[in-house]
Structure formats: C-alpha cells, structure tokens
Image (cartoon, rainbow, N blue to C red):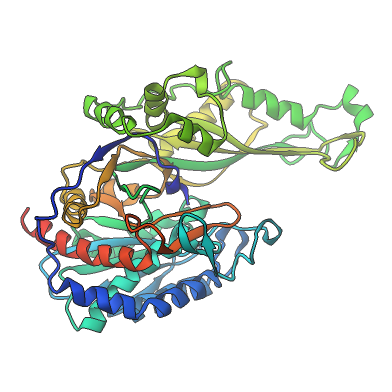
Length: 501
C-alpha cells in the first residue's frame, strides 16, 4: 500500500533508560503465550496470503471480507459484521472489555495484483526462506503490506485469550478491501451511522505496520500525503475528431491523433522543468512546513545516509541537484502530478503503420495539507477546460486527502512511551510520502488522532518477492513474535495515557 514510501524526514529519539518499567502486567506470560502460538500465527499468515482480494480485478470481493470477519472473531472480537460500501465491502468489529478507553484499529485486507513469473516463489504460497543478514522471512503478496503486521496485532489479541486476561482497552476495528484502489468507497463506510457511532467512542485510530529500520530504529509516523488516482482519455469515444478504431497511419494527414492530443494536454499539467505542478491554483491551499517540522527533518538527517537514500530509488541525484535537507523537505511538503503509465497504439516488436484510435494516461496526485481531494479534482477539470481540452475525458477512480496528527496527541505519546520503556530508539516521521486513508478518521466530522505502529521489517510492497520478517537474526530488530508483544505493550500504554488525558 501507499504508506510504505516513508520520508527521510525524521528525527531520531534516543530511548529512555529501561528503568521506566513497562506498563504491561505479567509481561512474561504474554511473551510465553505468543511464543507458544508461533507456528499457528505463521500458518494463519500463510493462509491469509493464499486468499488475495484484488479490488481492481474483482477477485475475492466476497471471500475477502468474510475471511476478515472470521479473523476478527477468532481473535476475540465479540461482534464482526460486513458493511456494504457500493464496492468491495468493509468489516466492522467491536471488542468490549469493559474498559474506560476505546481504541480504533484500521486494517486493509486487499492486496496489489502480481505476475507470478516475476517471483522467485509462488506469490500466494507464503514460502518461508532465510534472507542473509536478516533472518527467516515469509515471501508472498501482502506479506508486509499489510497482512504480516496485522497478523502480529491479531496474535497479540490471541495472547490475551491464552492468558485469560482482559484487554486494557475496548477495540473498534474497521477493515476495508479497496485500499489498493485509493479507498474508493471507504468514505461511505465511515459515514455509515453504525460505523461512525462506534468510531466516535475511540481516542484515535491506529494501523499496524512494520516500521523498524535495518539498524533496529523504530518509526512513529505523524501523517501521510493524500492520493488521487485518475485517467485522462482521448479517442473516438470522446470526440468525432478521432477514429473509432485504429486506422492506417497515412490518414494522419487529415485525421487528428488522440495520442498527440493527450501529450499536449499532459504538457500543460507541469512546468517546463517536468515536475512542478502547473495546474491553475494548485498551490493555493498548500500549507508550508512549520519550523518544528523542519527541525525534525534536520535532526533525522544527522543519522541518515544520503547515498543509501539515493540507492533505494536507484538515482544519482535529486531534482535540481538539491542538497539532502532541501530534497527531504520537498519529499514531504510538495504535492505532485505523476504519470503512472501511458497506453496507446501498437506496443509490439518493430513498427506498425497505425494511427491509434485511443490514448490513455494513468495519473496520480499526491496531496499535502491543506489540500483536499475535491479541490484537486475540480481544479484539474477547470484547468483543462480553460485550455480547450473538452475532448479529454477525465475519469477519477478514487482517492483521499492528506492526514496529520500532532506529536503531542495521546495516541502518539502512547507509542513513544511503549518504545521508551522497551529501550528501543525511534524516529519521528513528519509525513509519509506515501499514502493511506487516515484522513477519513482525523478529518471532519470524527477529527480523531491517527497513527501507525509496529516493530519488525519487510520490503517489496507492490513489487515481486514481497517479504516480512518472521525470525530475526539481529536482536535489535523484531520478528513477528516480538512485534506481537509490542502491540500488547501499546494497548496498555494507550489505556494509561488516554485515561490520564
């Protein structure tokens, strides 16, 4: 999912001395219960990987939510029901522990599509392999994005059942099946009266993730950019100026080309530098970074490697040859207009004398505070119409705005205390450059703090050979059992922190 593009905009925070005792009572009993169930936890993850829900392909759109519902009930939720969305359904589950504090939990059960030919092992097998320098990992679609971290959270709930202890907080779980298509119908789900009423009782919403670095530094994310996905289409379906089917290229002397028309339209969306958005009024509501956010970025870069950051994306230089600080600020503060793909005409070997009848561009916007999805859509359409591109069809497929939570929020404080008491160093992340639909929680009308939490590692989200760490070869980095125990600790810290607010 989109949340994995995490910015280098961080501040490293040394963990507090371990003298601050964990809030978790009888913590050793939880650790024993989690370890005893290790094989069952891993098998549960393998079974979940074997059932992919892919919204874009209409795959398992009924089986996916039913399975998510079963996972919730098995983990101890007393109620779990399917919530229709107009698209792929969501799941609402509640667990009443009789506690004074209620925590919201966000999950996604859908995954990106895959090409088995690109994988070293079948993408739905969930094969366990040894990764040099890392440990035992599970390889499969959805392993780290997000079924692995979510399985760790569910394993924490199973530990409460095994030890016979009540949770220190009540839980409200909302899980969607369209995150990978920009949460198209998720706002409708959140607006459902039953869902909204349940979420209003919470102190905030947390999502499970795997945010540890190879060096063992954990991450605490304070927000994420928004994302809007859409297509621009030109062809016989949009105007009689273009052929209804591909024709011989010789007729281009008197018949217009959809491909060239689309190129001309696309060229108006960015400046001559090829990356600065040029849509009319685009920067009108862009909120600049605060002095504190720039401080977080600067502090984080003291322990970061610019060479490693460049190597991760396979480039030798940043835009405009900017320095590390400037490019890191750009990463989290700049909205983008990106072309994901261009489709038109003949793409086989050699050439073909054809005038394509259709051209399509798949695009995305990344939005920053205080931009909105509705604003972005309206400004794009107005921009194109003003320049005479009424023949360019705009199809929005989904999206949402950015989200941001203050570092002083109780939900963030609970995460910091969890890591402090475990003696784990962590970094504050100003804003993920990637995206997740947290805005439906911390935007109006709920206005709830949101966050992501999770120890452990993984990589390859949306890519071949996606993996998630099961048994770590480095004691500073958590495997799935240690990640599960951290979720137990977090629940107790949320209870203590939120109760004290």
